[in-house]
Length: 109
Image (cartoon, rainbow, N blue to C red; front, side):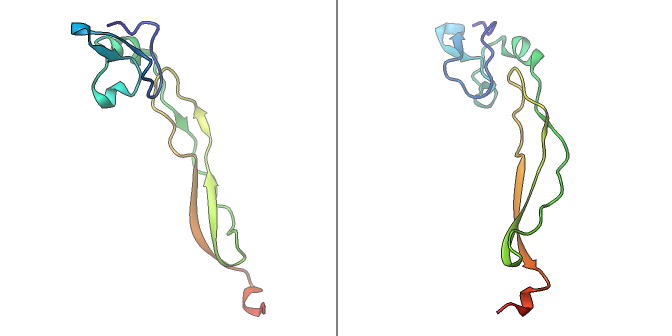
């Protein structure tokens, strides 16, 4: 089968061609995980693939609760978006628990 003009990012079951013995083979980037790529997939599709690149994590935000249990968050930006079936972007946001310890917490009634 030929992947020419059929390279698809991600999992795309409509992105297939007839391969050896008239069986379906795929031209989407998911075919590498399932091992059902067309014979020319790597030569045709991966050559132009660009994987996602992200910048560094930003600082953690302040705790969402000034007193007691809350959460903090941080994020990062995509610097190079994925193209032509390249690796997808990793998580861009993170969240974690925190305990607010504002000076007024002990005096609040």
